[in-house]
Amino acid sequence: MSRHPELKWAQRKDQVFLTVVLPDAKDAKVNLEPDGIFTFTAKGGAENNSYELKLELFDKVNVEESKINIGVRNIFCILEKSEKVWWKKLLLGEGKLPHYIKVDWDKWVDEDEDDNDVGNMDLGGMDFSKFGGMGGDMGVGNMDLGGMDFSKFGGMGGDAGDDFEDSDDEEVSKPMEAEGDGKHEAVDASTST
Image (cartoon, rainbow, N blue to C red; front, top):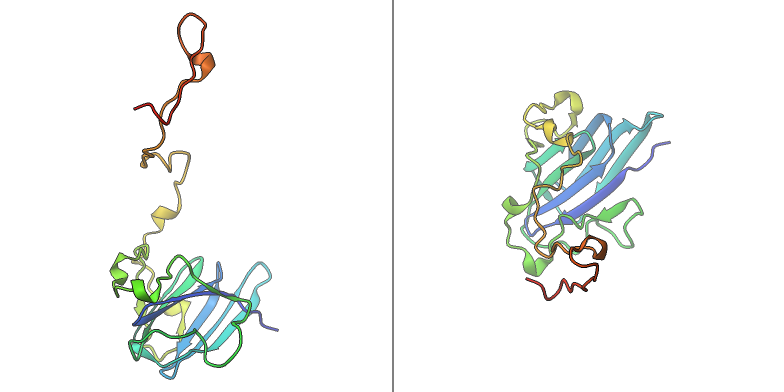
C-alpha cells in the first residue's frame, strides 16, 4: 500500500507552487499534464516505503513553462497556470483538502498583495529543469543537480547569528557587576540611549 507524502502549496496569479516534502526520495517521478493532472511517485524513509500522489488541479497548466527541482529534502515545482487568474482552491471538486495537503505560508501571498514578482522569493539558488520537452515523466536519474550549491547546508555552528544586529538589544550591567561603592543603581533600559 502506498502512502501520501506531505504536500505544501501556494499560488500567485500566474503560478502554483507545490512542495512535496519527502527527504531522501529515491526513484522520484513527477508527471504533469496540460489538463491539470499532477502525479508523483517515489520511495523513501528507512523502510523504503512507496509514496504517491495524484492530484486533479483546479484548472489547466502550461507544461512547457512549468519547472521542477528534485532536492535532498523535497521536490519543488513551479506550475505555470494556463490562465493568469487566482484559483479559488488547489484541487478540482468539492470538499476539504486531504490531511496531507497544507498551505505553504512561507510562499503564500494574498491576492491583493500579489505583484507577480517571484524574483523576490528566495529559492535558494535552485536549478530548475522544465517539465516540457522531457516527456512529462521525470526521474532523479535524469536530473542534473550540478547547479545547486550544497555548501550552505553545513557550517551552521554557533556563529550562525553573528551577522545580524538587533537594534533593541542594549547592554545593561547587572547589579552585581556595577562598579562603585557597593550601592547598586537600577538601570532602565527603555530610557537609556
